[in-house]
Structure formats: structure tokens, C-alpha cells
Length: 185
Image (tube, rainbow, N blue to C red; front, side):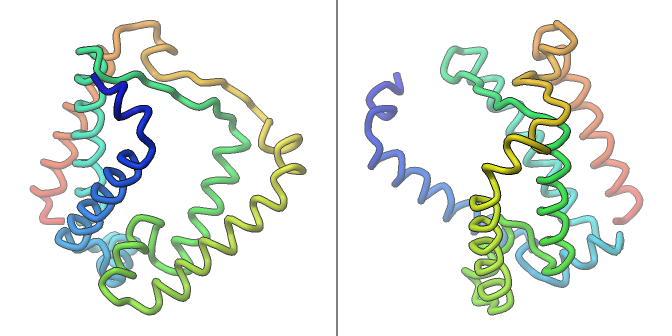
């Protein structure tokens, strides 16, 4: 069904571009491109960001696995390690803590005219990506390989059908969203 699209890189780029615009629009409408909303999230005063992220995880997880169940998509998990997780978390966390934006929200904020996102965020992403690319050969043979666990998913780990993991996670996320709303956060 998607074999023609799979071979057409121009259409893939156009679809990705349009989805990106839609994603940015939804981030902006949700309020998470606003620096103050993100800072209030980090201070545990406003849970808008968490609610949007949990909803996206919920919809994405169900959507991907429905497509997979109908044979319309295949999962291609990338191998991971403790080293890559720690280094990635530190880079992401440092940028988030210093600037108050994550990569998705910084792009959305730039689109709304936020100069701090443009000069701090986009420049920071480019400099950080450049540094990581320059250091990658040394990192790849060392710390990034520490604690390798391969390309495994939770259903693979537990040796169960994916829906055995998805259903409880969906219920947990719904319960968490309900609790956040009930608490007025």
C-alpha cells in the first residue's frame, strides 16, 4: 500500500514538512511553545506540558500498534545502551534547563517569533549537534557502548503480545491524566 510512497523521497519530505507544521501549530495552540508555561512545568506549578506529552504518547502508542496489527507499519527499534541514554539525557536536560525549551517546542517558539528560541535554541541545537558529531568517533567506541541492551521493546523483554503491555500502560496514563486534572494541575 505504501510502497510507492516509500520510494518517493520528495513526497516523504513534503508529508514530513506538512506534519511538522501541523505539529508545531498544535504545540502552539496547546501553549507549550510559551517559555513561561515550560518554566512553570519545571517548577511543578503547571502540568500542561506533561498532559500534552502523555496524550501524545497515548495516541502515538495506540496508533502505531494499530497500524502494526493491520500490517500497515513495521517497528524498527534502534539498539540502545545505558551510555547513550545517560549522554542523551544529559545533553537534552542541560539544554532544557538552560533555555527552557526542548527541540520540538523551540522550533514552535521560533515560528511564533521568540528570539530567545531562535538564537539560544536553534543555534544551540546546531552547535550541540556539531560538537556531538565531532566527538562521536571517540564516544561511540567508549561510553556510548556501555551497558548495551540492543533493539528491544518491552513486549520483547517480557515475551508477550504488544497489547499485553499497551493496555495497562494506556490505563496508567489515563489514570495519571485524571489525577492531574483532579488535582487542578
